[in-house]
Image: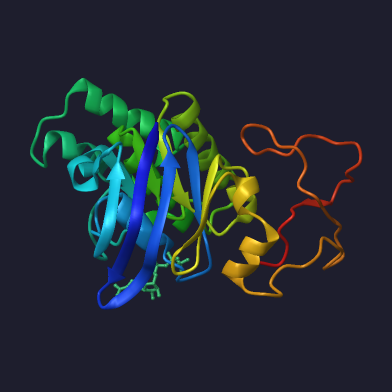
Amino acid sequence: MTLVTARDIVLYRGSHRAVSASSFTIPEGKITAVIGPNGSGKTTLLQAIAGILAPSAGEIQVLGKPVKEVRQDISFVMQSVVFPTGTPITVKDVVSMGRYAQRGWFGIFRPTDRNAIQYAMDVMNITDLKNRHLEELSGGQRQRVYVAQGIAQGHEILVLDEPMTGLDLTSMRIIDEVIHAEVDDHGHSVILTTHDLDEAAAADHVILMDGRVIAAGTPDEVLTRDNLEAAYGLGSLHEPAAIDGTTVVELPECTAHGDALESEEHQPGERYSRYEAL
Ligand SMILES: Nc1ncnc2c1ncn2[C@@H]1O[C@H](COP(=O)(O)OP(=O)(O)OP(=O)(O)O)[C@@H](O)[C@H]1O
């Protein structure tokens, strides 16, 4: 089934038109990556999909209903969540907030709520940090806490704004595994923004933006040279070649999780990317 259907939506941030008329669909039960240069409208589009920002023209539906009717069923993890300095809030408090929508701020947590909070902390590998104050965490640890809050909500639609940006390999791997578990084990849908074209190539569905949706479809359909040059500008792509001393090779066949399969033709130190120098 189709998860999101957008018809000619126009999105404003204040008086600034951030997304010009765009139409696209997003499939249910898949990972969708939204990519595009800085300021191309990715966060704005996510906000519209999550029902936080209403289009000034056009229509957006989620599971066949106007988005405002289903926004309580969508977990939205923002790029950065700002708590005032000195707020005495622990990791567990932040993850627990993911259940407030179900229970209310002063509601009593039931075992299902406690299980969801514990599950989210376990999969994001932050249980050891649960009594630490948010201010005492590194940026990457904090990002894992915010994703955990989204997971704790337990909704079938998880919308993540740049969940991988600025993370080390371990944190990236943890989030990547959780995203795939959401889809493969729980049948949920994940929509995320990224600047990593390899991550987009490993998704099921891709939306490419540059002030509007330029292309939407499978990675093969969207991540073409023409589309990428249209979004990122002519000359931003290099031929696969030695750029900085390492050999760049064609993206090899990937596993379902986007891991490059072993190949005898590839030497240690080669980078597996088609998308250099973006
Ligand atoms: N609150 C705001 N008021 C006015 N304009 C805004 C506001 N927030 C964002 N914009 C503008 O809207 C456009 C789209 O911003 P958006 O944050 O959606 O881009 P993005 O693709 O997510 O960027 P990035 O990759 O840098 O996170 C940009 O030109 C930005 O300057």
